Length: 327
Image (tube, rainbow, N blue to C red):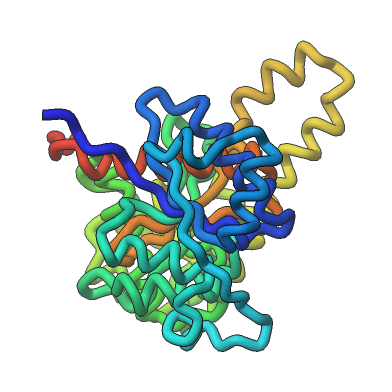
């Protein structure tokens, strides 16, 4: 039996650079995906049609993989994230999530407002059992053979101990399943490794993780993240977002410093590609009953393309039969 095609809903109105940049990214991703995928563009139908025409793409000729979900409503800055999903069901970001609930797509990609995206995902798709809050998770390279998964990296700016505890448990499960590793190590980002260091939320979360998370090893300082001292690093969304964007800027710094030596930069760039936001495109929102990826608002078409390919890989992995977990 032939497997059904992977279907992705794309919010074309979420990025800072307009629908054209997003749609260009969609077309670029299609070129580099061997098995292809079906795309549901969520945005104003007339705008999507006009953009496709300007790019020389006929919707009718590609109706086997290209659909447009007319989503004319605009989300305003004053809209309340916890209510948008109910009041603006015809907005692009809400429609892209609703398509999953309706079983019409397997995953959603948006470069829109994180709060709106998370609110829609929570209220439309729901949380996984036992999850306090979903979180955005990102892989960072390390000096070891395995990357580090950091969460949260921007969805929850202020966190209580139960939220951090839940991030640790989610991260442990996600890393275990992604790499087929029985018991990945989990650490809590702090300003020191002493048990009394940190805010009350961090100290309380450390105690809870020690009791509830099998792989918990203790605190980790910022200097230990890229050294690979832990497979999973837990933090609130404020600290995680600063950490992620600081690491991303290191790629640009290295290019500026070493760019004059083309041979040296070429050798280094490949090893550092994961630090270039355009090369991974988006990060998953974990802890929800669905597959949702959040891209940077400033994403280029290349970043959108890579984000789509990442979403496709995630769906493929979820469809694959369970494999034996390695110790």
